[in-house]
Amino acid sequence: MYKSIIVGTGPAGLTAAIYLARANMNPLVIEGPQPGGQLTTTTEIENFPGFPEGILGSELMDNMRAQAERFGAKFVTGWVNSVELGERPFKLNVEDMGTLETDTLIISTGATAKYLGIPGEQDNVGRGVSTCATCDGFFFRGKEIIVVGGGDSALEEAGFLTRFASKVTLVHRRDELRASKIMQDRVRANEKVEWALNRTPLEVVAGDSGVTGLKVRNNETGEEQVLEANGVFVAIGHHPNTAFLGGQITIDESGYIVTNPGTSETNIPGVFACGDVQDTRYRQAITAAGSGCKAAMDAEKFIESLEHNAVAL
Image (cartoon, rainbow, N blue to C red; front, side, top):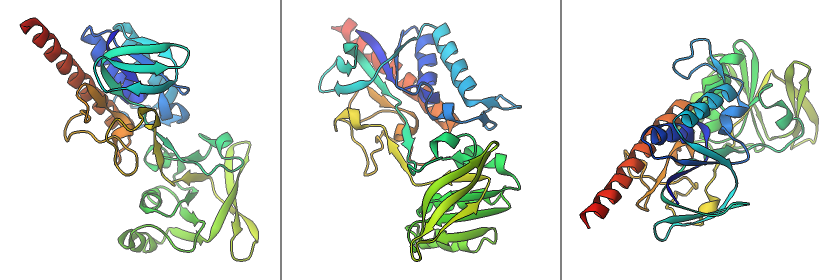
């Protein structure tokens, strides 16, 4: 029986663990198959405050974890198969661990970037393949970049990357884009953007030093060609990691957890959400860390109210 369990790590879950541990709440943190979350797939992070020379994503996560452990947070590795949130204490069914019970639950399971699933893609994550222009665009200053996608997020990333790249080629498998007209007009007016529509990505091409291009097929002619580039940014959306909740938490049409404005509170009292699993807009390490702080403080206040009511009874 725990006062608080945090499901998921990353900057949100680890920040929540630091705050709860310092408040003597002895939180249990359940790590998934990728401890540290998406930042562990990022090489150098230069936009997290406090590191003027930058820091490796894996190192930042290791430091956060050590900080939480220093104050008493306990970490276990496991897969949460399902949860029972109908009454408190909440129950978590964890693979190889059985059932765990907790008074409060903080969900920080993040959102998984969608990939194309083509050869060479996963092998070159961090070597030219990225899913975050804000995180990695700076490293492609003066280089040629490909952005794959046809929605607003893809065009937004393409426009952002023109701040650094000498050329950005937008690749989409259809001849029409899903993006809003205003976004299309804005990007089409950018002289640095070139278009490769009606092209299906086939393979990320790379050499010893990283990505060198993207092999595509022209859907009209069937012809294959390699578009030369130093980086390939995949912008086809994210999957919020919420399937294990079994529909017990209110989510939006895209699967993101809905929280009460200005808080980390979900529709179930005592259950809180932080990080990318509830962030449809920013999805940055620093905003995730801030939301983890909010979740911990909200959980602490909730537990205090339970203890106060118990004393009053």
